[in-house]
Figure 1 (spheres, rainbow, N blue to C red):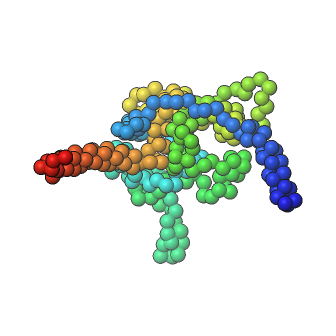
Figure 2: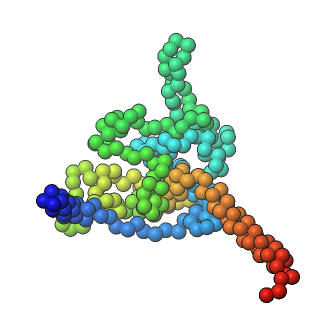
Figure 3: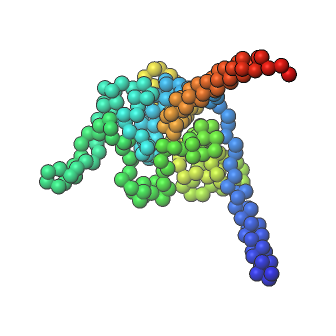
Length: 255
């Protein structure tokens, strides 16, 4: 009994001690945006996804990997085979061993995965003051209210309010747990030049790259939703047919 009392007391003490830490790690609720892929009939805006890929390629890929995707997957968002080959060929990847047993560098092919910005985690931390840039392959699914979270985070950088101290090498962002993040604001106006003439504001780039990361996290979304709608329609038709058969079978039975 004494041990039980001590265990309960210890648990309460730990819970009480943890409460301030949890409160300190709270973040503002993400700002809600309208996304074309939301809802039962949602689909990806291909133009926005392609623009988002450009933002990832020219801005985000300097630090963040996309290890779950290969260049050939870009065909799903409207790039042609020639365009994909040209995109992949811009990168050098390690291959081998060759006939002499040595590794060598070659231009990437469509079947290769997106090239990582750093060879390993240690190199990534060394280049980012100890912080580890997360892989973005599943970031939209890995975070609560993922699309809105990513958009809010990218557009949420601002000066810390009065009385709020920000650690050295940290930046204030109320949408990040604890409101302090080691990544500087990655987006600046006109950081990219869109081929379709869309103005590259911070909000536009944040929304476009969120579209791209949403697709990267769930490329099967459209097929899944189509299958869901088809299944519901099938069940409705089947129910109607079964009801009609039931009426026919029991039509001559008098109650």
